[in-house]
Picture (cartoon, rainbow over the protein chains, first blue to last red):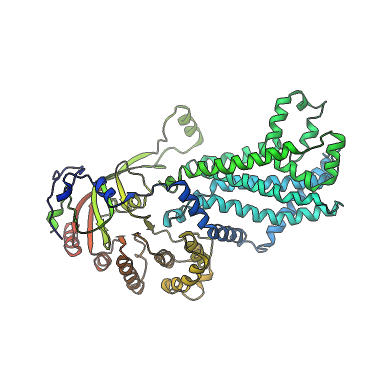
Length: 323
Length: 263
């Protein structure tokens, strides 16, 4: 090893300066910069980051499938639960709201109405709750390998999409069992789910960042989600509640606020495109003839959540897994 | 040679290219959950009085460490328990933010720790595939590396099909190392991950580490087995209470360390 000139304070705690003949008194930071070394674990530029995420698309899909499979490995029925869970859910709601309480309040085909609401709201609900845990549950992976962390909440959203597709089989069986004819309108269900997926990706990224740095969130979420469920008209018809004579009608601004709520928007749109009976009921009884406003909100929420959520998550990229 | 690198001074070799520069690094971290009464009432009154968690203490783990590691080096880090070795590796990996000073690296360092699993509920097979994809390999690359990784990990017949939580710590560490070593890293940080492996695996790892060094990366190794360090490294850093104690040739540093710790 060569012996260049040496500077520095022997025994001192801080060594800011080092010496090398052509660069006398160069600090270590400058020396590092001269060789193109960067601060460890700095956040890459946005464009590069998006490319990195895109390059990991296979990882996202494989991770989601693996999660889905491992979810039921401990149970005897295994993957059957993917179908059985939504089916049992629907059965419970039928038992309580259909048979015991009879809360239909004039909504026709109440069971398909209810099941559509529960399944599609559950899609967003589970994206939020598992998104909040997506970073914390994968710390050993985050610490061992380097990859863009945004792939984790993205994978969570894909897991939930795969779960939803299973639930949709049950949903369609129920919808057709109640005599709903196959119609052209149902094709519109595809963009509804697509927009909701975009919204879910965005919101699960927001939750992933919040949950990564504040574990109290996961304790609080069940209550927030239940409140959201009741405010979104999942088990009752919100437009009906806003008719004159109801309490909600007195507070117009509150009604408008609830109509802009993304939970309601995606659920209500799905009902409009899937359930002809409900569509007819809304237009004849409630005098609501168009869904332009709903579509507008659906697109807006999807874009705002996706872009905003991604940026919000990205800005803390270098801090995930620290501690 | 050994005494030319006492703490407080730093040599730079201008003929070699640095890959990790640690500049007057201080690491202070907070430890939660050390004590406290732990019932709801005391926690509530604490929140009301806007106090920090009583159980929180600050630990000054690294106190002004500076060194430069060059391309192609395998650096062993030794020191007693709690001297800050693992903390240093975490800081190099970027997992602990520096309190003062900085760490500069080329590329993103990968840290291999002792926790046995990447994703413990998934089979070894799936861990391999996901690990490779996460490191940015394409599906076809992953397929071609798969056999190599399984052979390298040398798991017993059939274990690759079991969830990783059923693995012994040695098996888990081997698979983890095999996955991480499948890709060329600029900086590979190994924290006791080889400690649980048997002699055969250690030989294989040594060969792999030599290969990685030849590709002009650098390898950092924390290990308590001094013979492992002597075998695999061409430079050893001795850390004591978060400060540099000695830095130089493995044989010399280890000899001094053995003498000091009274082995």
